[in-house]
Length: 109
Image 1 (tube, helix red, strand yellow):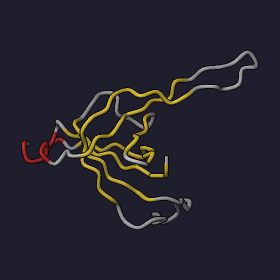
Image 2 (cartoon, one colour):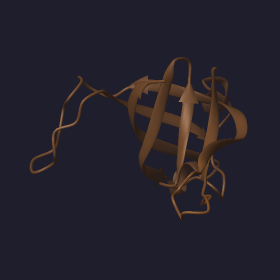
Image 3 (cartoon, one colour):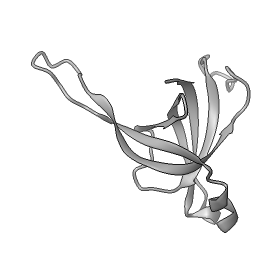
Image 4 (cartoon, helix red, strand yellow):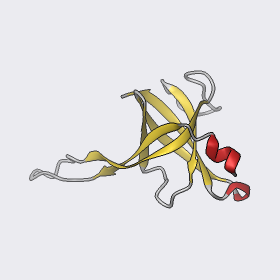
């Protein structure tokens, strides 16, 4: 476990959508910062790589490993360096209960 924790060498900010409506009931919400944490960020393949039957996407895919938190899910995004990382999947491994792996699509901030 200590070896994994030492690899968390990047700072990422967890953001959550804060919904809000104006007088016309239009969505005027915004992303709010929840917390900045340490993580390990790795590139996951080439840009545009896709699974069979999956819609084409632009941008790059990323694997982000961080200490697990109850609020990690598909309703958060990460801000890292000059990238916005949209969370597409959260994986929790029973052998490494303290950590979660987030699979993300990236785009410039």
